Image (cartoon, rainbow over all chains, first blue to last red; front, side, top):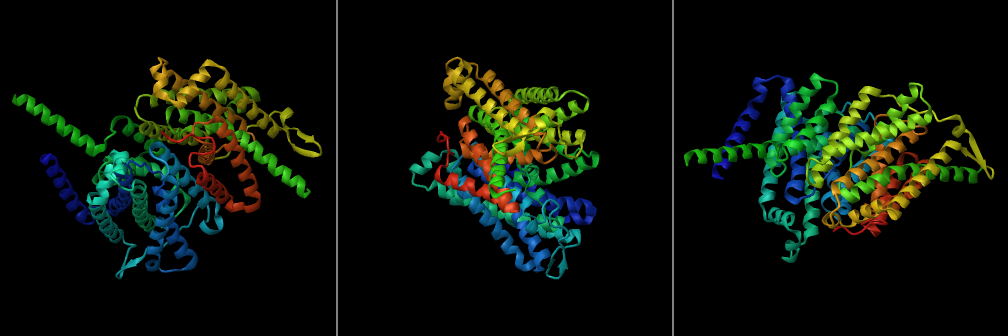
Length: 321
Length: 287
């Protein structure tokens, strides 16, 4: 077990060095992809927090990201408000939406929960699609300028990248702290045996509700970053097709770990970029990849890596005997 | 048009849409009830049937052949999907698998049939407007409504009057028990999946004559199907009938009175019903 922990740490250290130095030795394109991958990573972590630590597979994460994006888009483009006053309301909007969705979805568990969050996020998609006077409908709000932070304009790709990197690392640390806190442990207890946790006197529903709201907060943060990155907010952000990327990132990385979510976000961003250069049948590639992952890599890359490690050790042991 | 005629018109629109929704949702709810799989490819089956029917009709075949071709194409697709879904265990991986399959089929359809809306021409006999007691309404929509009622009757007879129907109902209530009684549950799954898929296929081929088939239509249908089965109660066919009528009417009246905010009315309806009955109108409490 110690062996595995150390190798993961080395992996993270290597990733840290690569990520910090990235803009110095690669082109703008790679930096942009990494920016995209990091925000997808935050979303995958917010998905993994629910799915991996609380056994709640949510299809609503993109709705939380999208509502934050709409607050930024509408605020900047329709009301001419500065970015600085919009960040908190944007995240707050995601929190409120998560509080509403959670209140309804919390009554169900497992596959019912998935279905409920799917229905709610599709309703949200329908609302932003139809409410043309507010959301500009299908094409969405375009040309949203990037903000300026401490005098640095985020128009420069490396600047936005570093901001995204810092936010992502902060999100990761907060989430890591959260899942190891008493709250996180209770969650995992509820995941493994809700009846026992209830019998021990824990308020199961309250914990499940709170973690939905928390995960919605992080999805909202990712939504703000994504809107800065693309400069566009449209119903596509909240569509089922976008949700599949989040689920895929979480699955690729391994759903039970936060690190897996981050890794998955980056992997998917790069894979999808390669796919879109090779073919116009982008979604066919995404879908096929998704099918293959579900069929052959249910524990994700990190899980697969651990599996191979365990298998190698077993082999070595056998040779030793 | 008088106030009353316009009201009747909206009512009839709501009911015919409900008929279509019922054909889609009844299969969706049966598949979920029996297999605990949210078939995310279900709405894609709907547009696929429409596309195939359109192509067959363009090739010069009659309308009835086109409808049959669309339905059969989807039945075969559903069979293939089920054979793949069977390879993984657990309701969550199976659901995710249908999501991936749905995305691939939807994208390949977009590639093959392009982005434009496609409409299947209904035969002249069905296109005549019919006047009943001074109220004139397109004949084709009456046809859709009657077809949906016939499908509902057929399903009801199948589920209550035949041995296979009794087994399906028993499976919805208690899957391990049915399996333990020596019934081949895998074959039952295949049957229900193909049956449910075919009903959606029929809805897509028939519905393609008054709601155009095109990219994005699958998402719209998925949303309506989800709301119908959640309102009606998961796994309940009568529930999906009642859910379809509620959703059809709310959508029809909502669109005319609230235009771009109609979907808020639909969301509100869902919230109110779930507020009173979290398991849906005809649903049983989750085990």
